[in-house]
Length: 613
Image 1 (cartoon, helix red, strand yellow):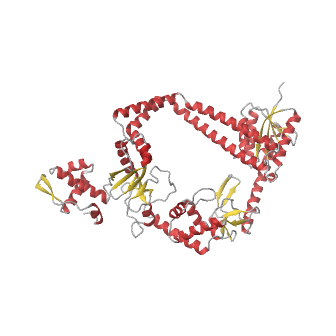
Image 2: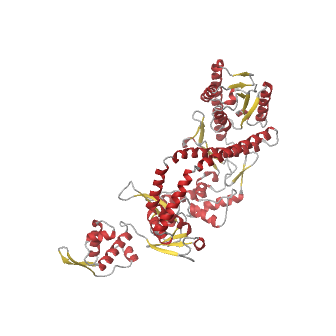
Image 3: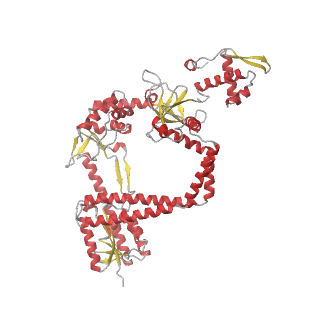
Protein backbone atom coordinates (compact mmCIF):
# COMPACT_ATOMS: atom_id res chain seq x y z
CA UNK A 1 0.00 0.00 0.00
CA UNK A 2 1.38 3.41 -1.01
CA UNK A 3 2.26 5.88 1.70
CA UNK A 4 0.02 8.95 2.08
CA UNK A 5 1.62 11.91 0.32
CA UNK A 6 2.00 15.04 2.43
CA UNK A 7 3.17 18.60 1.80
CA UNK A 8 4.12 21.19 4.39
CA UNK A 9 3.28 24.88 4.35
CA UNK A 10 5.41 27.14 6.55
CA UNK A 11 5.21 30.88 7.11
CA UNK A 12 6.63 33.07 9.83
CA UNK A 13 4.15 35.29 11.62
CA UNK A 14 4.55 39.08 11.82
CA UNK A 15 5.91 38.93 15.34
CA UNK A 16 8.52 36.29 14.32
CA UNK A 17 9.92 38.11 11.29
CA UNK A 18 12.84 39.47 13.29
CA UNK A 19 13.83 35.97 14.44
CA UNK A 20 16.30 34.60 11.91
CA UNK A 21 15.78 30.91 12.84
CA UNK A 22 12.00 30.97 13.32
CA UNK A 23 11.15 29.91 9.78
CA UNK A 24 13.93 27.32 9.61
CA UNK A 25 12.77 25.75 12.86
CA UNK A 26 9.18 25.67 11.64
CA UNK A 27 10.23 23.79 8.48
CA UNK A 28 12.25 21.27 10.51
CA UNK A 29 9.30 20.71 12.86
CA UNK A 30 6.96 20.16 9.89
CA UNK A 31 9.31 17.66 8.29
CA UNK A 32 9.70 15.81 11.58
CA UNK A 33 5.92 15.60 11.89
CA UNK A 34 5.65 14.05 8.41
CA UNK A 35 8.28 11.45 9.28
CA UNK A 36 6.64 10.61 12.62
CA UNK A 37 3.28 10.04 10.92
CA UNK A 38 4.90 7.77 8.36
CA UNK A 39 3.90 9.92 5.38
CA UNK A 40 5.83 10.62 2.18
CA UNK A 41 6.98 14.25 1.86
CA UNK A 42 5.90 15.33 -1.64
CA UNK A 43 6.78 19.05 -1.50
CA UNK A 44 7.48 22.02 0.75
CA UNK A 45 5.85 25.45 0.50
CA UNK A 46 7.97 27.90 2.47
CA UNK A 47 6.74 31.49 2.61
CA UNK A 48 9.06 34.30 3.63
CA UNK A 49 6.37 36.96 3.49
CA UNK A 50 3.89 37.44 6.30
CA UNK A 51 0.46 38.95 5.66
CA UNK A 52 -3.23 38.72 6.39
CA UNK A 53 -4.26 38.08 2.78
CA UNK A 54 -3.02 35.81 0.00
CA UNK A 55 -1.89 38.68 -2.23
CA UNK A 56 1.84 38.57 -2.88
CA UNK A 57 2.26 35.20 -1.13
CA UNK A 58 3.68 33.17 -3.99
CA UNK A 59 4.04 29.87 -2.12
CA UNK A 60 0.50 29.99 -0.72
CA UNK A 61 -0.86 30.72 -4.20
CA UNK A 62 1.17 27.80 -5.57
CA UNK A 63 -0.31 25.54 -2.88
CA UNK A 64 -3.82 26.83 -3.63
CA UNK A 65 -3.38 25.95 -7.33
CA UNK A 66 -1.85 22.54 -6.50
CA UNK A 67 -5.01 21.67 -4.56
CA UNK A 68 -6.58 21.04 -7.97
CA UNK A 69 -3.93 18.41 -8.83
CA UNK A 70 -3.24 14.88 -7.60
CA UNK A 71 0.15 15.86 -6.23
CA UNK A 72 -0.59 15.18 -2.53
CA UNK A 73 -3.19 13.96 -0.05
CA UNK A 74 -2.38 15.85 3.17
CA UNK A 75 -1.37 19.44 3.97
CA UNK A 76 0.67 19.91 7.15
CA UNK A 77 0.68 23.30 8.89
CA UNK A 78 1.77 24.49 12.31
CA UNK A 79 -1.53 26.17 13.17
CA UNK A 80 -4.48 27.76 11.45
CA UNK A 81 -3.10 31.31 11.62
CA UNK A 82 0.00 30.25 9.62
CA UNK A 83 -2.22 29.57 6.63
CA UNK A 84 -4.00 32.93 6.78
CA UNK A 85 -5.72 35.41 9.08
CA UNK A 86 -8.55 36.27 6.75
CA UNK A 87 -11.98 34.69 7.15
CA UNK A 88 -12.92 34.82 3.49
CA UNK A 89 -9.64 33.26 2.31
CA UNK A 90 -9.91 30.57 5.00
CA UNK A 91 -13.30 29.36 3.76
CA UNK A 92 -12.22 29.54 0.11
CA UNK A 93 -9.23 27.35 0.95
CA UNK A 94 -11.38 24.85 2.87
CA UNK A 95 -13.95 24.68 0.09
CA UNK A 96 -11.37 23.82 -2.56
CA UNK A 97 -9.52 21.42 -0.26
CA UNK A 98 -12.62 19.43 0.69
CA UNK A 99 -13.95 19.27 -2.88
CA UNK A 100 -10.64 17.77 -4.03
CA UNK A 101 -10.55 15.24 -1.19
CA UNK A 102 -7.50 16.67 0.60
CA UNK A 103 -6.95 16.72 4.36
CA UNK A 104 -5.44 19.39 6.63
CA UNK A 105 -3.23 18.42 9.59
CA UNK A 106 -2.23 20.98 12.27
CA UNK A 107 0.76 19.53 14.11
CA UNK A 108 0.54 21.85 17.15
CA UNK A 109 -2.84 20.31 17.98
CA UNK A 110 -1.88 16.91 16.52
CA UNK A 111 -5.19 16.56 14.70
CA UNK A 112 -6.84 16.71 11.28
CA UNK A 113 -9.42 19.32 10.38
CA UNK A 114 -12.93 17.83 10.30
CA UNK A 115 -16.39 19.12 9.48
CA UNK A 116 -17.09 19.33 13.20
CA UNK A 117 -14.33 21.94 13.43
CA UNK A 118 -16.02 24.30 10.98
CA UNK A 119 -17.53 26.52 13.66
CA UNK A 120 -14.53 26.71 15.95
CA UNK A 121 -12.05 27.24 13.09
CA UNK A 122 -14.32 29.95 11.72
CA UNK A 123 -14.26 31.68 15.08
CA UNK A 124 -10.48 31.30 15.22
CA UNK A 125 -10.18 32.86 11.75
CA UNK A 126 -12.34 35.79 12.90
CA UNK A 127 -10.23 36.23 16.03
CA UNK A 128 -6.99 35.99 14.02
CA UNK A 129 -8.26 38.57 11.56
CA UNK A 130 -9.31 40.87 14.39
CA UNK A 131 -5.89 40.42 16.00
CA UNK A 132 -4.23 41.45 12.72
CA UNK A 133 -6.56 44.42 12.44
CA UNK A 134 -5.66 45.62 15.93
CA UNK A 135 -1.96 44.97 15.26
CA UNK A 136 -2.17 47.05 12.08
CA UNK A 137 -3.80 49.91 14.02
CA UNK A 138 -1.08 49.77 16.66
CA UNK A 139 1.70 49.76 14.08
CA UNK A 140 0.20 52.71 12.18
CA UNK A 141 -0.35 54.59 15.44
CA UNK A 142 3.25 53.93 16.48
CA UNK A 143 4.47 55.21 13.11
CA UNK A 144 2.48 58.45 13.45
CA UNK A 145 3.58 58.94 17.06
CA UNK A 146 7.22 58.45 16.12
CA UNK A 147 6.86 60.85 13.19
CA UNK A 148 5.26 63.53 15.37
CA UNK A 149 7.87 63.15 18.08
CA UNK A 150 10.71 63.54 15.59
CA UNK A 151 11.92 59.94 15.46
CA UNK A 152 14.34 58.53 12.92
CA UNK A 153 13.69 59.44 9.31
CA UNK A 154 12.23 56.60 7.23
CA UNK A 155 14.20 56.87 3.98
CA UNK A 156 15.40 54.12 1.71
CA UNK A 157 19.11 53.63 1.14
CA UNK A 158 18.94 54.95 -2.44
CA UNK A 159 17.74 58.48 -1.62
CA UNK A 160 19.94 60.83 -3.65
CA UNK A 161 22.21 62.92 -1.45
CA UNK A 162 21.94 60.74 1.67
CA UNK A 163 23.22 57.41 2.92
CA UNK A 164 21.76 55.37 5.75
CA UNK A 165 24.01 54.30 8.61
CA UNK A 166 23.62 50.98 10.48
CA UNK A 167 21.93 52.73 13.44
CA UNK A 168 19.26 54.17 11.14
CA UNK A 169 20.60 57.72 11.15
CA UNK A 170 21.40 59.62 7.94
CA UNK A 171 24.53 61.28 6.71
CA UNK A 172 24.97 63.62 3.74
CA UNK A 173 26.92 62.24 0.77
CA UNK A 174 28.94 65.34 0.00
CA UNK A 175 29.72 64.44 -3.62
CA UNK A 176 26.00 64.15 -4.37
CA UNK A 177 25.19 67.15 -2.19
CA UNK A 178 27.40 69.34 -4.41
CA UNK A 179 25.37 68.24 -7.45
CA UNK A 180 22.11 68.98 -5.61
CA UNK A 181 23.30 72.51 -4.68
CA UNK A 182 24.24 73.15 -8.32
CA UNK A 183 20.79 71.97 -9.44
CA UNK A 184 19.11 74.52 -7.15
CA UNK A 185 21.51 77.26 -8.22
CA UNK A 186 20.87 76.55 -11.92
CA UNK A 187 17.11 76.51 -11.35
CA UNK A 188 17.21 79.83 -9.45
CA UNK A 189 19.27 81.27 -12.34
CA UNK A 190 16.51 80.43 -14.83
CA UNK A 191 17.56 77.04 -16.24
CA UNK A 192 14.82 74.48 -16.83
CA UNK A 193 14.97 70.86 -15.68
CA UNK A 194 15.83 69.59 -19.14
CA UNK A 195 18.61 72.15 -19.56
CA UNK A 196 20.05 71.26 -16.15
CA UNK A 197 19.96 67.56 -16.99
CA UNK A 198 21.74 68.24 -20.28
CA UNK A 199 24.48 70.17 -18.47
CA UNK A 200 25.30 67.19 -16.26
CA UNK A 201 24.92 64.81 -19.19
CA UNK A 202 27.52 66.78 -21.19
CA UNK A 203 29.85 66.58 -18.18
CA UNK A 204 29.46 62.81 -18.08
CA UNK A 205 27.98 62.77 -14.58
CA UNK A 206 26.16 59.61 -13.46
CA UNK A 207 24.52 58.75 -10.16
CA UNK A 208 25.73 56.01 -7.83
CA UNK A 209 23.28 53.65 -9.56
CA UNK A 210 25.06 54.25 -12.86
CA UNK A 211 22.10 56.13 -14.34
CA UNK A 212 22.20 59.67 -15.70
CA UNK A 213 20.25 62.55 -14.17
CA UNK A 214 17.04 62.90 -16.17
CA UNK A 215 14.93 66.04 -16.45
CA UNK A 216 12.20 64.31 -14.42
CA UNK A 217 14.66 63.47 -11.63
CA UNK A 218 15.94 67.06 -11.60
CA UNK A 219 12.38 68.40 -11.27
CA UNK A 220 11.65 66.06 -8.36
CA UNK A 221 14.82 67.11 -6.57
CA UNK A 222 13.91 70.80 -6.91
CA UNK A 223 10.39 70.24 -5.56
CA UNK A 224 11.45 68.00 -2.67
CA UNK A 225 11.57 69.88 0.68
CA UNK A 226 13.78 67.09 2.01
CA UNK A 227 16.83 68.96 0.73
CA UNK A 228 16.13 71.99 2.92
CA UNK A 229 15.83 69.74 5.98
CA UNK A 230 12.04 69.26 5.98
CA UNK A 231 10.65 65.74 5.69
CA UNK A 232 6.98 65.25 4.84
CA UNK A 233 5.56 62.17 6.56
CA UNK A 234 2.17 60.48 6.90
CA UNK A 235 1.39 60.98 3.21
CA UNK A 236 0.29 57.38 2.63
CA UNK A 237 -1.42 54.79 4.80
CA UNK A 238 -2.05 51.04 4.48
CA UNK A 239 -5.75 50.40 4.89
CA UNK A 240 -6.32 47.02 6.55
CA UNK A 241 -9.89 46.61 5.26
CA UNK A 242 -9.18 47.29 1.58
CA UNK A 243 -5.60 45.94 1.76
CA UNK A 244 -4.46 48.93 -0.32
CA UNK A 245 -2.11 51.84 0.22
CA UNK A 246 -4.13 55.06 0.14
CA UNK A 247 -3.09 58.70 0.00
CA UNK A 248 -3.76 60.87 3.06
CA UNK A 249 -5.20 64.37 2.81
CA UNK A 250 -2.58 67.11 2.72
CA UNK A 251 -3.92 68.74 5.89
CA UNK A 252 -2.97 65.57 7.80
CA UNK A 253 0.62 65.43 6.60
CA UNK A 254 3.34 65.65 9.25
CA UNK A 255 6.22 68.04 8.55
CA UNK A 256 9.45 67.08 10.28
CA UNK A 257 11.54 70.24 10.62
CA UNK A 258 15.21 69.32 10.95
CA UNK A 259 14.47 65.59 10.78
CA UNK A 260 17.18 65.26 8.13
CA UNK A 261 20.31 67.38 7.64
CA UNK A 262 19.71 70.26 5.19
CA UNK A 263 21.74 70.29 1.96
CA UNK A 264 20.58 73.70 0.63
CA UNK A 265 19.57 76.88 2.42
CA UNK A 266 15.79 77.48 2.69
CA UNK A 267 16.20 80.78 0.82
CA UNK A 268 17.87 79.07 -2.16
CA UNK A 269 15.21 76.33 -2.10
CA UNK A 270 12.44 78.95 -2.26
CA UNK A 271 14.16 80.85 -5.10
CA UNK A 272 14.66 77.69 -7.17
CA UNK A 273 11.06 76.56 -6.69
CA UNK A 274 9.62 80.01 -7.47
CA UNK A 275 11.69 80.16 -10.65
CA UNK A 276 10.45 76.70 -11.60
CA UNK A 277 6.84 77.76 -10.98
CA UNK A 278 7.31 80.90 -13.10
CA UNK A 279 8.79 78.85 -15.94
CA UNK A 280 5.95 76.34 -15.74
CA UNK A 281 3.29 79.05 -16.00
CA UNK A 282 4.87 80.33 -19.21
CA UNK A 283 5.93 76.91 -20.42
CA UNK A 284 2.41 75.49 -20.27
CA UNK A 285 0.72 78.40 -21.98
CA UNK A 286 -1.70 77.75 -24.80
CA UNK A 287 -2.14 74.17 -25.90
CA UNK A 288 1.24 72.68 -25.01
CA UNK A 289 0.91 69.73 -22.69
CA UNK A 290 3.96 68.72 -20.71
CA UNK A 291 4.91 65.08 -20.88
CA UNK A 292 7.61 62.69 -19.79
CA UNK A 293 7.79 60.39 -22.80
CA UNK A 294 11.34 61.19 -23.87
CA UNK A 295 12.77 58.98 -26.55
CA UNK A 296 9.78 56.67 -27.02
CA UNK A 297 8.67 58.09 -30.40
CA UNK A 298 10.34 57.36 -33.73
CA UNK A 299 11.00 61.06 -34.28
CA UNK A 300 12.41 61.66 -30.78
CA UNK A 301 15.94 62.98 -31.06
CA UNK A 302 15.67 63.25 -34.85
CA UNK A 303 13.95 66.63 -35.30
CA UNK A 304 16.28 69.59 -34.73
CA UNK A 305 15.60 73.32 -35.04
CA UNK A 306 17.34 74.82 -38.06
CA UNK A 307 17.61 78.19 -36.31
CA UNK A 308 18.89 77.51 -32.79
CA UNK A 309 19.91 73.86 -33.02
CA UNK A 310 17.69 72.75 -30.12
CA UNK A 311 15.72 69.46 -30.35
CA UNK A 312 12.01 69.42 -31.12
CA UNK A 313 9.50 67.91 -28.67
CA UNK A 314 6.15 66.25 -29.25
CA UNK A 315 3.02 68.19 -28.18
CA UNK A 316 -0.75 67.81 -28.48
CA UNK A 317 -3.50 70.32 -29.09
CA UNK A 318 -7.12 70.44 -30.17
CA UNK A 319 -8.03 71.34 -33.74
CA UNK A 320 -9.07 74.96 -34.24
CA UNK A 321 -12.22 74.20 -36.19
CA UNK A 322 -12.85 70.76 -34.75
CA UNK A 323 -12.30 70.49 -30.98
CA UNK A 324 -12.66 66.72 -31.13
CA UNK A 325 -9.67 66.41 -33.46
CA UNK A 326 -6.29 66.00 -31.76
CA UNK A 327 -3.32 67.54 -33.58
CA UNK A 328 0.14 66.17 -32.81
CA UNK A 329 2.80 68.83 -33.37
CA UNK A 330 6.55 68.97 -32.83
CA UNK A 331 7.93 72.25 -31.49
CA UNK A 332 11.36 73.65 -30.78
CA UNK A 333 12.44 73.08 -27.16
CA UNK A 334 13.80 76.62 -26.99
CA UNK A 335 10.40 77.99 -28.02
CA UNK A 336 8.63 75.80 -25.43
CA UNK A 337 10.82 77.10 -22.61
CA UNK A 338 11.36 80.75 -23.62
CA UNK A 339 8.75 81.58 -26.27
CA UNK A 340 9.26 83.41 -29.58
CA UNK A 341 10.36 86.82 -28.35
CA UNK A 342 13.55 87.93 -26.67
CA UNK A 343 17.19 87.25 -27.43
CA UNK A 344 16.97 83.66 -26.16
CA UNK A 345 13.60 82.80 -27.72
CA UNK A 346 13.00 81.01 -31.02
CA UNK A 347 10.38 81.69 -33.69
CA UNK A 348 10.87 78.40 -35.49
CA UNK A 349 7.86 76.85 -37.22
CA UNK A 350 5.79 74.03 -35.72
CA UNK A 351 5.45 70.86 -37.79
CA UNK A 352 2.65 68.30 -37.71
CA UNK A 353 3.58 64.67 -37.11
CA UNK A 354 1.33 63.27 -39.85
CA UNK A 355 2.80 65.68 -42.40
CA UNK A 356 6.36 64.68 -41.47
CA UNK A 357 5.52 61.01 -41.98
CA UNK A 358 3.87 61.79 -45.33
CA UNK A 359 7.10 63.48 -46.44
CA UNK A 360 9.21 60.58 -45.17
CA UNK A 361 7.03 58.09 -47.05
CA UNK A 362 7.52 60.02 -50.29
CA UNK A 363 11.27 60.23 -49.75
CA UNK A 364 11.53 56.56 -48.83
CA UNK A 365 9.55 55.60 -51.93
CA UNK A 366 12.01 57.62 -54.01
CA UNK A 367 15.20 56.25 -52.44
CA UNK A 368 14.11 53.03 -50.76
CA UNK A 369 11.05 52.13 -52.79
CA UNK A 370 10.51 49.17 -55.08
CA UNK A 371 9.03 48.75 -58.52
CA UNK A 372 5.62 47.13 -58.87
CA UNK A 373 7.17 43.80 -59.80
CA UNK A 374 9.52 43.82 -56.80
CA UNK A 375 6.68 45.00 -54.59
CA UNK A 376 4.37 42.14 -55.64
CA UNK A 377 7.15 39.58 -55.24
CA UNK A 378 8.04 40.75 -51.72
CA UNK A 379 4.41 40.96 -50.71
CA UNK A 380 3.60 37.44 -51.92
CA UNK A 381 6.78 35.99 -50.44
CA UNK A 382 6.13 37.66 -47.08
CA UNK A 383 2.55 36.44 -46.99
CA UNK A 384 3.65 32.86 -47.69
CA UNK A 385 6.19 33.01 -44.88
CA UNK A 386 3.55 34.41 -42.54
CA UNK A 387 1.03 31.75 -43.53
CA UNK A 388 3.60 29.02 -42.97
CA UNK A 389 4.62 30.54 -39.65
CA UNK A 390 1.05 30.75 -38.40
CA UNK A 391 0.17 27.35 -39.77
CA UNK A 392 3.01 25.56 -37.98
CA UNK A 393 1.81 26.87 -34.63
CA UNK A 394 5.15 28.13 -33.30
CA UNK A 395 3.37 29.09 -30.09
CA UNK A 396 3.12 25.40 -29.21
CA UNK A 397 6.89 25.10 -29.25
CA UNK A 398 7.17 28.31 -27.24
CA UNK A 399 4.76 26.96 -24.60
CA UNK A 400 6.83 23.78 -24.34
CA UNK A 401 9.96 25.86 -23.89
CA UNK A 402 8.30 27.94 -21.16
CA UNK A 403 7.13 24.80 -19.35
CA UNK A 404 10.66 23.44 -19.41
CA UNK A 405 12.05 26.72 -18.10
CA UNK A 406 9.45 26.81 -15.30
CA UNK A 407 10.42 23.27 -14.31
CA UNK A 408 14.10 24.24 -14.24
CA UNK A 409 13.45 27.29 -12.05
CA UNK A 410 11.25 25.24 -9.72
CA UNK A 411 14.16 22.83 -9.30
CA UNK A 412 16.42 25.75 -8.43
CA UNK A 413 13.91 26.92 -5.80
CA UNK A 414 13.83 23.47 -4.24
CA UNK A 415 17.64 23.29 -4.16
CA UNK A 416 17.82 26.80 -2.70
CA UNK A 417 15.37 25.85 0.05
CA UNK A 418 17.42 22.77 0.90
CA UNK A 419 20.58 24.86 1.26
CA UNK A 420 18.74 27.35 3.47
CA UNK A 421 17.36 24.64 5.74
CA UNK A 422 20.78 23.04 6.02
CA UNK A 423 22.27 26.39 7.07
CA UNK A 424 24.49 26.64 3.97
CA UNK A 425 23.14 30.09 3.07
CA UNK A 426 21.75 32.85 5.24
CA UNK A 427 18.09 33.83 5.36
CA UNK A 428 18.91 37.16 3.72
CA UNK A 429 20.63 35.48 0.76
CA UNK A 430 17.86 32.91 0.53
CA UNK A 431 15.18 35.61 0.49
CA UNK A 432 16.97 37.62 -2.20
CA UNK A 433 17.54 34.66 -4.53
CA UNK A 434 14.08 33.22 -3.90
CA UNK A 435 12.55 36.57 -4.85
CA UNK A 436 14.56 36.60 -8.10
CA UNK A 437 13.46 33.07 -8.98
CA UNK A 438 9.83 33.84 -8.13
CA UNK A 439 9.93 36.95 -10.31
CA UNK A 440 11.36 34.93 -13.21
CA UNK A 441 8.67 32.25 -12.79
CA UNK A 442 5.94 34.91 -12.72
CA UNK A 443 7.28 36.45 -15.94
CA UNK A 444 7.16 33.03 -17.60
CA UNK A 445 3.57 32.51 -16.42
CA UNK A 446 2.59 35.89 -17.85
CA UNK A 447 4.16 34.89 -21.18
CA UNK A 448 2.28 31.61 -21.06
CA UNK A 449 -1.01 33.42 -20.41
CA UNK A 450 -0.28 35.72 -23.33
CA UNK A 451 0.33 32.73 -25.61
CA UNK A 452 -2.96 31.18 -24.52
CA UNK A 453 -4.79 34.36 -25.46
CA UNK A 454 -3.04 34.50 -28.81
CA UNK A 455 -3.92 30.88 -29.45
CA UNK A 456 -7.48 31.84 -30.26
CA UNK A 457 -6.25 34.29 -32.85
CA UNK A 458 -4.87 31.52 -35.05
CA UNK A 459 -8.40 30.55 -36.03
CA UNK A 460 -9.83 31.91 -39.27
CA UNK A 461 -6.32 32.03 -40.70
CA UNK A 462 -7.26 32.98 -44.26
CA UNK A 463 -9.48 35.82 -43.06
CA UNK A 464 -6.65 37.20 -40.94
CA UNK A 465 -4.19 36.80 -43.80
CA UNK A 466 -6.45 38.81 -46.11
CA UNK A 467 -6.69 41.62 -43.55
CA UNK A 468 -2.90 41.70 -43.26
CA UNK A 469 -2.51 41.75 -47.03
CA UNK A 470 -5.02 44.60 -47.36
CA UNK A 471 -3.15 46.59 -44.74
CA UNK A 472 0.19 46.08 -46.50
CA UNK A 473 -1.24 46.97 -49.90
CA UNK A 474 -2.91 50.14 -48.57
CA UNK A 475 0.15 51.99 -47.39
CA UNK A 476 1.63 49.42 -45.04
CA UNK A 477 4.75 48.82 -47.15
CA UNK A 478 5.33 52.55 -47.57
CA UNK A 479 5.10 53.08 -43.81
CA UNK A 480 7.50 50.20 -43.21
CA UNK A 481 9.93 51.65 -45.75
CA UNK A 482 9.71 55.08 -44.09
CA UNK A 483 10.37 53.57 -40.67
CA UNK A 484 13.34 51.66 -42.08
CA UNK A 485 14.71 54.80 -43.73
CA UNK A 486 14.35 56.72 -40.48
CA UNK A 487 16.92 54.38 -38.92
CA UNK A 488 19.48 55.73 -41.43
CA UNK A 489 18.57 59.37 -40.72
CA UNK A 490 20.92 61.20 -38.36
CA UNK A 491 18.66 64.22 -37.92
CA UNK A 492 15.92 66.21 -39.63
CA UNK A 493 16.58 69.95 -39.50
CA UNK A 494 13.43 72.06 -39.54
CA UNK A 495 13.97 75.26 -41.51
CA UNK A 496 11.49 78.03 -42.21
CA UNK A 497 10.14 76.49 -45.40
CA UNK A 498 11.88 73.16 -45.83
CA UNK A 499 12.97 70.01 -44.05
CA UNK A 500 16.61 68.99 -44.38
CA UNK A 501 16.80 65.21 -43.97
CA UNK A 502 20.42 64.41 -43.07
CA UNK A 503 21.49 60.78 -43.42
CA UNK A 504 24.15 59.03 -41.37
CA UNK A 505 26.98 58.31 -43.84
CA UNK A 506 28.07 55.20 -41.92
CA UNK A 507 24.60 53.67 -41.99
CA UNK A 508 24.10 54.61 -45.63
CA UNK A 509 27.29 52.76 -46.52
CA UNK A 510 26.16 49.68 -44.59
CA UNK A 511 22.60 49.78 -45.95
CA UNK A 512 22.04 47.46 -48.87
CA UNK A 513 18.85 49.18 -50.07
CA UNK A 514 19.93 52.79 -50.43
CA UNK A 515 23.69 52.29 -50.55
CA UNK A 516 23.74 52.11 -54.35
CA UNK A 517 21.71 55.30 -54.72
CA UNK A 518 23.30 57.64 -52.20
CA UNK A 519 26.70 57.94 -50.61
CA UNK A 520 28.75 60.22 -48.39
CA UNK A 521 27.31 62.91 -46.15
CA UNK A 522 23.94 62.94 -47.91
CA UNK A 523 20.99 65.28 -47.23
CA UNK A 524 17.61 65.66 -48.92
CA UNK A 525 15.72 68.97 -48.94
CA UNK A 526 11.94 68.78 -49.03
CA UNK A 527 9.38 71.59 -49.10
CA UNK A 528 7.11 71.53 -46.08
CA UNK A 529 3.41 71.71 -47.10
CA UNK A 530 2.11 74.14 -44.52
CA UNK A 531 -1.59 73.96 -43.72
CA UNK A 532 -3.68 76.51 -45.66
CA UNK A 533 -4.91 78.20 -42.46
CA UNK A 534 -1.35 79.22 -41.50
CA UNK A 535 0.44 82.34 -42.76
CA UNK A 536 3.01 80.25 -44.62
CA UNK A 537 0.29 78.02 -46.04
CA UNK A 538 -1.60 81.04 -47.39
CA UNK A 539 1.59 82.35 -49.00
CA UNK A 540 2.27 78.99 -50.69
CA UNK A 541 -1.29 78.97 -52.04
CA UNK A 542 -0.87 82.47 -53.50
CA UNK A 543 2.43 81.49 -55.11
CA UNK A 544 0.82 78.38 -56.59
CA UNK A 545 -2.03 80.47 -58.05
CA UNK A 546 0.47 82.83 -59.69
CA UNK A 547 2.38 79.88 -61.19
CA UNK A 548 -0.82 78.29 -62.51
CA UNK A 549 -2.19 81.42 -64.19
CA UNK A 550 1.23 82.08 -65.76
CA UNK A 551 1.00 78.64 -67.32
CA UNK A 552 -2.68 78.94 -68.26
CA UNK A 553 -4.03 82.52 -68.07
CA UNK A 554 -7.60 81.44 -68.83
CA UNK A 555 -7.99 79.25 -65.72
CA UNK A 556 -11.24 79.57 -63.79
CA UNK A 557 -11.38 79.66 -60.00
CA UNK A 558 -12.93 76.19 -59.96
CA UNK A 559 -10.10 74.78 -62.06
CA UNK A 560 -7.52 76.52 -59.89
CA UNK A 561 -9.11 74.90 -56.81
CA UNK A 562 -8.95 71.48 -58.45
CA UNK A 563 -5.27 71.87 -59.36
CA UNK A 564 -4.38 73.01 -55.83
CA UNK A 565 -6.52 70.54 -53.93
CA UNK A 566 -8.35 73.37 -52.14
CA UNK A 567 -12.00 74.32 -51.87
CA UNK A 568 -13.44 76.84 -54.33
CA UNK A 569 -14.25 79.16 -51.41
CA UNK A 570 -10.68 79.13 -50.10
CA UNK A 571 -9.20 79.55 -53.59
CA UNK A 572 -11.50 82.51 -54.34
CA UNK A 573 -10.28 84.23 -51.12
CA UNK A 574 -6.63 83.76 -52.12
CA UNK A 575 -7.36 85.19 -55.57
CA UNK A 576 -9.06 88.23 -54.00
CA UNK A 577 -6.02 88.81 -51.81
CA UNK A 578 -3.73 88.78 -54.85
CA UNK A 579 -6.00 91.18 -56.76
CA UNK A 580 -6.26 93.52 -53.78
CA UNK A 581 -2.47 93.50 -53.36
CA UNK A 582 -1.99 94.50 -57.00
CA UNK A 583 -0.21 91.28 -58.03
CA UNK A 584 -2.74 90.02 -60.60
CA UNK A 585 -5.80 91.28 -62.47
CA UNK A 586 -8.45 89.83 -64.72
CA UNK A 587 -8.72 91.22 -68.25
CA UNK A 588 -12.28 90.63 -69.39
CA UNK A 589 -15.89 90.74 -68.29
CA UNK A 590 -18.69 88.35 -67.48
CA UNK A 591 -16.36 85.49 -66.72
CA UNK A 592 -14.70 85.66 -70.13
CA UNK A 593 -11.08 86.78 -70.34
CA UNK A 594 -7.61 85.95 -69.04
CA UNK A 595 -5.49 86.57 -65.97
CA UNK A 596 -2.49 88.85 -66.06
CA UNK A 597 0.42 88.86 -63.56
CA UNK A 598 1.28 92.48 -62.76
CA UNK A 599 4.27 91.92 -60.43
CA UNK A 600 6.03 89.13 -58.63
CA UNK A 601 5.27 88.15 -55.07
CA UNK A 602 7.77 89.36 -52.46
CA UNK A 603 10.31 87.00 -50.91
CA UNK A 604 8.70 84.45 -48.65
CA UNK A 605 10.29 85.73 -45.46
CA UNK A 606 9.51 89.36 -46.28
CA UNK A 607 5.90 88.42 -46.92
CA UNK A 608 5.55 86.60 -43.59
CA UNK A 609 7.25 89.35 -41.56
CA UNK A 610 4.96 91.91 -43.18
CA UNK A 611 1.92 89.93 -42.08
CA UNK A 612 1.16 88.47 -45.51
CA UNK A 613 -0.15 90.78 -48.23
